[in-house]
Length: 434
Image (cartoon, rainbow, N blue to C red; front, side):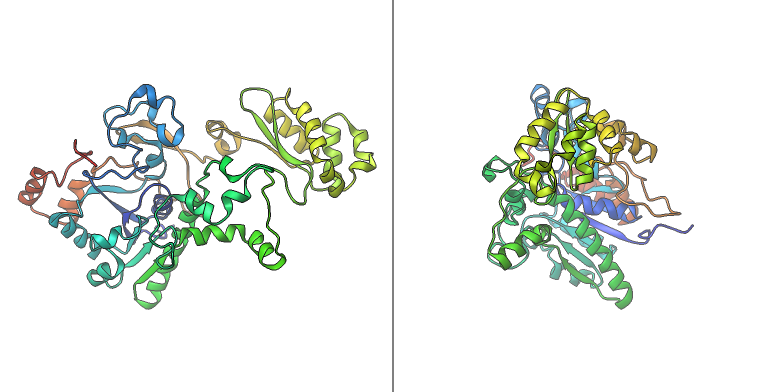
């Protein structure tokens, strides 16, 4: 069967929050060895949780999955090891503490650069350069390195020094505006952070191409993944419409420009919904039959998508009146049996009991010292004949210091103990973390 595609590749990981860690996760699944460099003195917001100290448990219980995603809603004494955002993406990597703002920490990173194939980071603009870890500096240490950076707005241009998260890039790329609701301004939209996962996939792909190019030429590569430019491609048709026709596309909510009716409709229960999309007279007839109103399909006022578009609000009222007393999954299956595109809207817990994902074995169990044993989302893709890597659980902060400093870099025990005494090596955040 042979090894995994990236089993000979070692990656130095300076990623944070979601986009970078998602890219690294996929590369680790393909067999790459990941060394994640972290700091005990500086906490990165949104990466190992939102704060580096234990927040109040009662307060956490009222937060959403991004800020309050701790095991059993309990941050316990080491919340940085128990947070959902980090742990959902953190498998197949080792964590080492190296304070890059110190002489010892910087020297550690330089030694790691010498033995790594890929350097990947998505920090704010200028951060790596301030610590002497920009591409030009790293290339001098390892000319064959593949250096992947993921700036929000790119490395040049008027915005290149701006900092922000995925939601800011989505707004710049018009995605935030286009997915709004009809008649409402973009201020009513909540950031989706769709760009993070999307950019992570793009960065993983670019990294693979960098490895392929180096294998062919022997030369390293500097790869820039501008997250906003990547996002802009996903609203390309709207941009072309504006450029070629002078027409600004307005938000239409859950409706569609060509299909009608299309929307999200409330079902029985707390916050249960179903999405329905009709794109032909045949599908319209299926919807009418499922609703117990087959004669409506023969009414000329509703024949064709254009006619239904003109009466969309009226139709939405009728559909909502039908769905609101029905169970979401049952309604989905009924509509699908009549050839109508439809799907229940899962909440955060639904995928874990979804019969399709369960039968496919999507979820994999892992044991992590701070969290216990839980099921984690599986691989983004599958390789026929090869089982992708699900080897290491999300690491505790600094969990693999001994392996990196002792086994990999072969520092003397005296030097390791000296750095431990200076609190340059250790596990967990320091009390005065910033």
